[in-house]
Length: 140
Image (cartoon, rainbow, N blue to C red; front, side, top):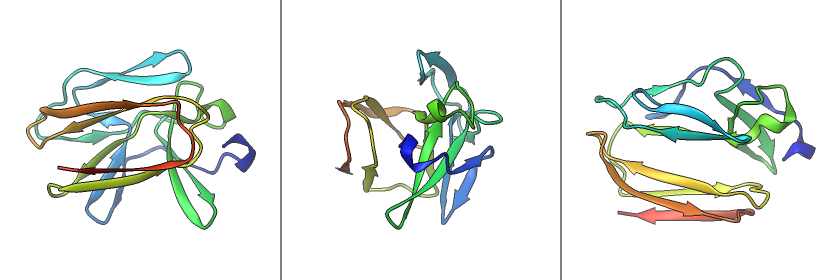
């Protein structure tokens, strides 16, 4: 991803079409795990997405006609090492029976995806890697 540039820095929670994006949920803690974010703890109810702080929340890049949303991590924007290494929390306005997203890059890293219900309880957790450019889809 570094060859594509840094893109735009998003320091605050992003709300679009009934979906809220940020770094993690209130009640969770963001810890550094090497160059990556590690989210621990249980979210508070009601679920509330929060930002990760200045230069550490989200970024957006234009890639092949699409906008790629990525997490920023401990290196802090505009350091290129921060791009795509951070956590992203997504909160939907209503329950979703399906979810799909694309990994644009991945660079042989790993990701853990946690599915949390409206009561803040974990439904499931899956880890994938080594990552490359691929699509993921889930059905509940």
